[in-house]
Length: 118
Image (tube, rainbow, N blue to C red; front, side, top):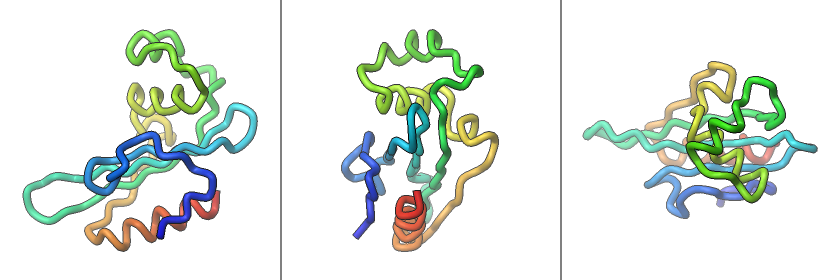
C-alpha cells in the first residue's frame, strides 16, 4: 500500500496505468510535486518517476503564460499541477531526469520512499 503522507493525487486514480501527479504543501507557497508517467514503447511496461520542490513565487515562473494556457487556478495546488503541464518536470526539477522502472512493484516502492520522506 502506497504511503501518501499528505500528498493528494491530482491525476488519474489509476496512476500506474494512465499517469499521475501528486502534490503536497511543504510550507508557505512551496510544494512537493511527484509525477508518474507510464512509458509506452510497445514492448515491456515502464514508468518514469520525477519529483521536485516547487516555490510558486519563483521569479522565473511566468504566471500569466501558465494561466493563459491552463486557465486561472482556484488553489495553489491546482496551479502547481498547471506548472507541471506547462513547464514539465524536467524544467521544474532544475534539469534532473527522473528514475525509470520496468517493474511496477519497484516503481511503487520508489514512490512510497519519496512520499514517506517528504
